[in-house]
Structures are given as C-alpha cells and as structure tokens.
Image (cartoon, rainbow, N blue to C red):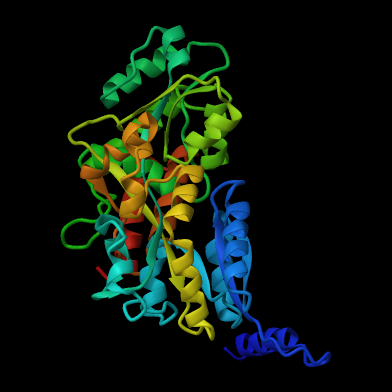
Length: 408
C-alpha cells in the first residue's frame, strides 16, 4: 500500500513538473493486460491512445503479461504493494481476490444503462455474495476442430461420439507423420482439456455435497480413454511437453486431425494457415452434451488511488466500436448485447459453431482455492500420462487432496 502511494505520488510529481514549474497534473492508471495473442497489446495501446486524446489529464499505462505467468505476477505485485489499478484476470481467481479484499465491488460505479449492456450469462460468474466484483471482458465456449483434409485422406468421418472418435483416430494415425488427437498435458488449462471428456462421460468436477468428483467411475473412465489414446499412439507422444499453444500449433501445421479449443484459435488459423480446411464441431458425446463456458474478468483493485479515472477508462473501453474490434480480432464471443446483435455473429459459421454449445455450457465452480484445486488435477493427469500412476490411483489421490483443501 505504501509503495503504491509512493509510486503514485512520484508519478503525480513528475506530471506536475515540480522542477520545471509546469502546472498541468496528470493521473496515471496502471492496467495489466492478459496476452491472448499478438494482437492484444496493440489493441489496448490503440484504445488507450484514443482515450488519452479525449482525456489528456489521464495516462493509461498498459503492461501486457502472458497468461501462464499472470497470476504469479499479480500475486507478487499485490504482496509488494505495487498492484495495478485494473487488470484482466481469470474469473476463476475472482473469488479468492474478493475474499481477500483485493477486488473492488463495482455496483456503486455501474449505472443502470451501462449494466444493461452486458449479457446476463457472462455477467453472472462475476457476482459474488450479491456484489458485482468484476466485468466480463472475454468469453468463449469450447468445441472440437477437425482437419477435414486429413479425415478425407484417411477415409474417416468426423465423430459425434467418443467411440467414433477412437475409430476415426485409428485411421488418421495411419497417415505418415500425422497424429490423430492433440492432447494437452502442460501449463494452464491442462485440467480443462480433461473436463471435456469428464462432463460428456457424465462426471462432474464437484459432487452435489461439494466433494471432489475426480474419483467417480465416470471420471476414471474418461481418464482411461485419454490414456488408451496415448498408449495406442493416437495422440502426439509425451503430451506433458505440450501446452495448449503447442497443440494449437500442431493443428495449424496440419499435423494433427483433431483438437479441443476455443474461438480465439480461428483468427490465428485465418492469418497463419489460410488454406487449412477445418470444421468446428461439438465435443463427442458419451452420455450427455457438454462444453466449457469460460469468461475472463476485468477487475478493479480495492487499494487503487485512482478509481474514478480507472472507471472512466473502463466505460470508454466498453464502447461498441472497441468491443466489436476486440471480440472479432481475438475470436471471442461477445459479452455485450449490441455487439452480439451484429450480423457477423449470426452469419459467421465458425463463431456460430462455438456459440451453439452455450445452452449446455458448464463453468468452473466458483469456489475458494480454485487454482490450487486445478493444479492438483493437472498433476494427477500428468502422472497418468507419464505412466507414474494408473487413472484410478491418480484420480483417487487427487480427489482426497482436493477434499482436504476444501475441508470436506
């Protein structure tokens, strides 16, 4: 807190031009931006420049941080008293930030008109104990992408069930230097790559009583399926060496038949692999339909000394022109009603393919210590993929550890 105040004072002093006698004060708003793609930084630089032109007394200081290091960076900055004024965060982190008093409630800032611009589905994950603790800044639902050229060469049909996926994978993997399924096993969202199967096999992250669902028969069956695919050479080898970006790169290179992904991969394909023939499809079914609904949140920090200026920038950044450019550029689903009403989201087959899953989308549970729980799941999956433990042993141990974390 004291370091923050010193930094703000120093910035204000410089802006005042004490040594030179310049009288025009300038306020600095520090904004930490999660990096979605190479377009993210330039986009927010453009928004900041437009805002500063209209508000010459406010400077928006943008720092772009990769997703894989963002939580650690924010945690370090918070502990050191130099947290930003606003930041994009994973919504799954928001409960912990709210309970620790780090997040600023936004209800008093939101006018009825501004609040009404948001799609309720994407606003709800940021409501904690009846208070709005953040705003949806990015949204997606997940789906399966298939390489249609590889399916045609292999004489396979794009699958609608997991059994069909397995049969198609055997044909595709017979092609030289081609992997059938890209399997993520490293870094952020390795757990999410498992939830796609977990949910469609009929399992859940948490049981109704709040205990872990990782040791359920459905969860174990889903893990066995992934392990069978790996053992039979139907995935790339050593998935624990592959982050989601690594898996996406395999698909863009035409080296893998199927991956599970989110809409932001589509602009990358258009730019980097324009000749790739792909199709967006729902996840395979076992006993039910499911997809992963995900939001990221724009959060204001409770100890910010420039909340009014930060909020002014937030309202500016949510204007239709900026939201439309951001959502289209990154490949996200709209979080605001006006952007969602644009013809682009009604006629674009790729986006429609992802949005089709929203009626049966599942979200990560809003619970304390979620990142720690997710990490337990990731480590269990890695032990399975590395043949250090069986699916039964790894998931049973993970469930017990999660129950201990949750006090269950």
